[in-house]
Length: 205
Image (cartoon, rainbow, N blue to C red; front, side, top):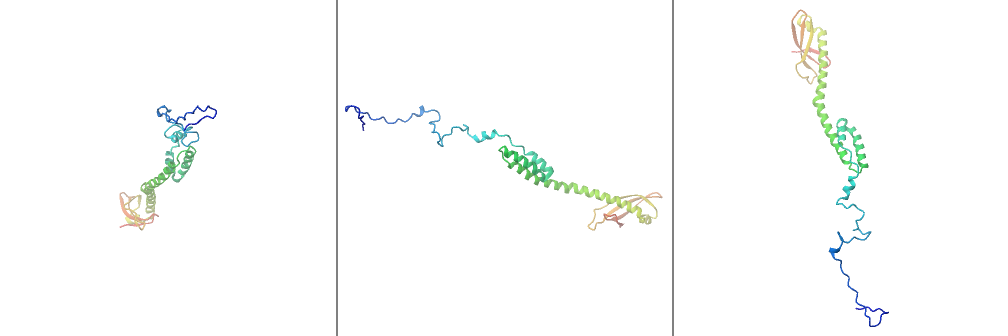
């Protein structure tokens, strides 16, 4: 269909408009046609990197170390929550994760409780019992020396008592001791006694 200009002479015929020509892809700029401003495909103004979130994160301060939380929690037990709170708060202000500090706190509380319980049961408790039994033995030596029954038993005054436990303390609270004495007249003698934790004793078999 031809269009005629009304101001043109009748013999002047307007040519048909040329059809639109698609742009040659080889002539386009690298990356293709730029989308219009405001279009969802328009990415101008953003970081031209594959992972822009990682680049933004690298500009933030590094998160505090979680190792001090382990240290304070191991030695102070639940009081280590103070270190966990302070460091997780700093991590939140830096835009970092807070979970590592609470994981370190929880794991260390459990592990520390197991360690200190085992140490107390296997080391501290036997040491305490040893000290207490040593005091009981010393009190027994004083008692058997001043009681007079040993001197009556051997028929001579005795000195320098030395009592040594010869077995564990029974369920009745009694323990057998082998006590050696020095005779004033010369020589030594020994007897077995059974005593409780208060120093009360009786001659053994």
